[in-house]
Length: 161
Image (cartoon, rainbow, N blue to C red):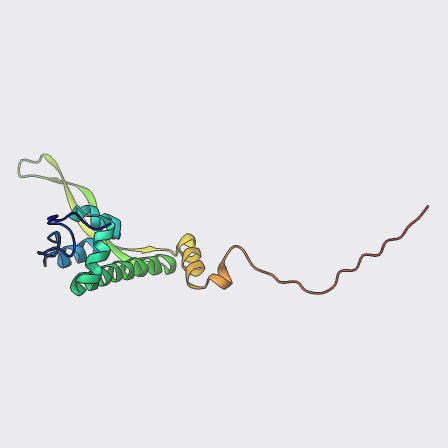
């Protein structure tokens, strides 16, 4: 159905329809939000538009589309890296606080906290290993195995009376 004459928001009318809400700075904002793991639906909420509008912006603004792709790829790579470390085990440094007692000039006992960096080791996590293998090599590691059996199965009926 064609738009009513004089509708300033109708495509094809003089002026080209409704003004886009898109701004150039949205590409960098979307990139940063994707680094936090945002989905297209969450990005739409952030910009106060529909998910359909986000899809239109991806088609109309190459820099916006690339920002989303790069942000999501970076976030996914970071998570994959952490999962890989957890599956294999890793070393890390941790700051530990110790309560210490000493004496001041008047001979009174004083407590204070001293910190020290300590090397720790996180052993491999079985769940992370299973998750990694099921996703990287699903045919070999999935729970459900497809086994094809072929051949003839014969049934011999013996009748006794």
